[in-house]
Image (cartoon, rainbow, N blue to C red; front, top):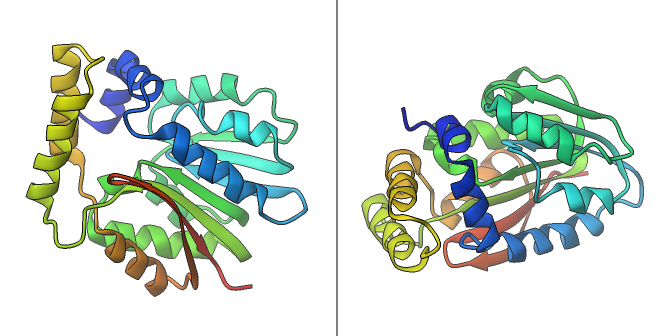
Length: 231
């Protein structure tokens, strides 16, 4: 079954190729995230990572920051096994939990200085995205921040047009993938991707109580965003 978890477990080499060839602009986006985290409070901070995967892109950044605690949540057990290895050099406590990130947000009683999520939100329906923003605001301490990496449709672009354009770019530019790998990746996008427009995401964040929205970087449909909770 071509679920997001199966995509990770069964196509690990595809994931590695996407990152290695920077097809989704991981290098530029995570550089922007590091700059944003580095501009945070001058004290150790607690971070919740939703849909953390193997944490391979975030771990090197966290090693250079003053982190008080890290908690990562992901559906895929094999991803968390890899995350444990990638995060083992952090000087702070590391807590990895397997589960649905939205369920975890709703039930978690913890408080965090920053919540981070990368390329996970677009799998949710609009209603569940709104729940995501609301629960993130509840989990953040006053003055905390939500850092979000995700894809977004262009303004005025409906979902079928977005999927055609994005998958067309994949077919044209993701040349390092073998034919079967590319078919699998395109099938995943067409089956599970439900991105909002950027204005739609900003509106959801505002409705959830976030008052400061910053665009950290945009690379085609790929965005790095920061949302602040009032102090």
